[in-house]
Image 1 (cartoon, helix red, strand yellow):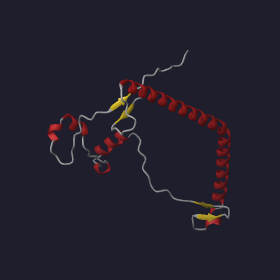
Image 2 (cartoon, rainbow, N blue to C red; image 1 turned 90 degrees about the vertical axis):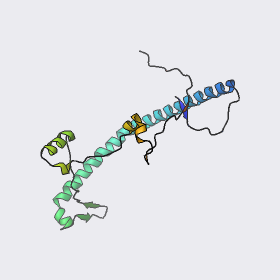
Image 3 (cartoon, rainbow, N blue to C red; image 1 turned 180 degrees about the vertical axis):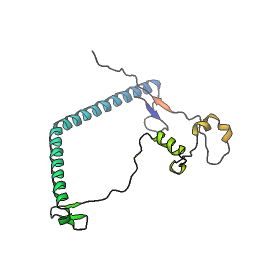
Image 4 (cartoon, rainbow, N blue to C red; image 1 turned 120 degrees about the horizontal axis):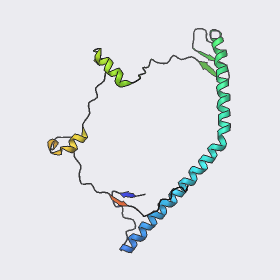
Length: 171
């Protein structure tokens, strides 16, 4: 795992090559320890999830059954519950019917766009204009001096990569 440093912040500055080597080793040790801690946490989360999964699933199934039953009963008694309204207070809770706003679903957008264009229905096709940064990077001299455009080059990152061995699975 490489550590990318964009600016120096003071801290402990090695005073020799040996000090720098020692600090790089310490960086690698710390990164591996962080990795171990993260792996342990993930293992614990996986174990907790595995232990709770049957109870969660059972509660979800029961919840779905209860919701379906209440929905069925309320649908059968909607006029009695709400009259001309859309909400009923049942003391322990409220039930309501709400009309969803209209929505549009598109399958195979490129095909639909072609059909709309073919039918002359251009108002239903949105054209998006945006700056082509790749073209600017390819020809920076062409845009030199244009207000609002800045081509940044020559930024150097300092990277520390402690040596480590990858351990793979054995067959």
